[in-house]
Image (cartoon, rainbow, N blue to C red; front, side, top):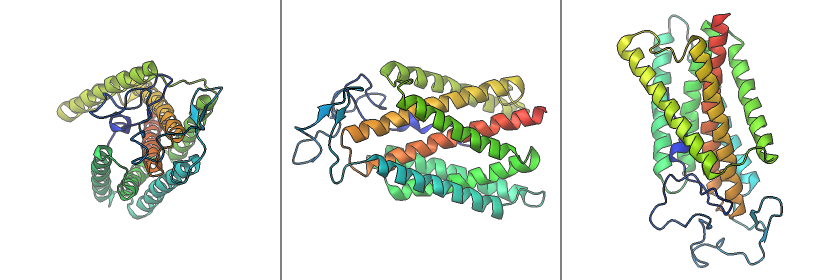
Length: 295
């Protein structure tokens, strides 16, 4: 099961209000913090300058008129719908075609693990590319859907038929809640916010890796971080981290539109949003499974 969040390797957009994007460190030739990352010169980048842009009075973001070829919110919504739709389709097919009954559970689990590994590799390849590759992103979504379909079917069969729907509804509620909080500016993504989220995520992942190692070599549930009271606590922490990653994703989209990012960057935004929602869904599924098992 791939349980790391893509924000670790995702690039973002710089901005004058103090948030420098998702890069852990500036790369050679990268724009300085607060500069437009697409300002490469008028000849090379048609979005570099805009003499008519006026600062937004409420948020201080440069508001440029929509140009042909620049990313818009409609582009992000469309690409995200494509990737999420592919995940859902892959999950539905896996649920129907890869049963987790006693006769087929080994085969289904094997295919699910293989799909998860392929999805992880595809996400890494995309993360290291300078430009988004739609074929890679859609393929990632398809394999991730297969993995989620088998895991969800297993939880529904062996723990409770209502757990999957609870996880889906919980994921939707987290998305809607974070989007509302971000739009109302109850959440402000700053350097400090970014640093706190990254530090918490690294600590969370290290604990999960240690727990996995203890489970593999010591048997049982390792240190107990995925069952009982500790499992519930870490499930809630994982969901909160996912919500924070969503805020980072929304910031990425907002900055990309404000700076006139090329339309192809909407695929990168969709990729990030999809991976974050997968993270939240898996944590929700694990949390509700623990709660149902304790009943």
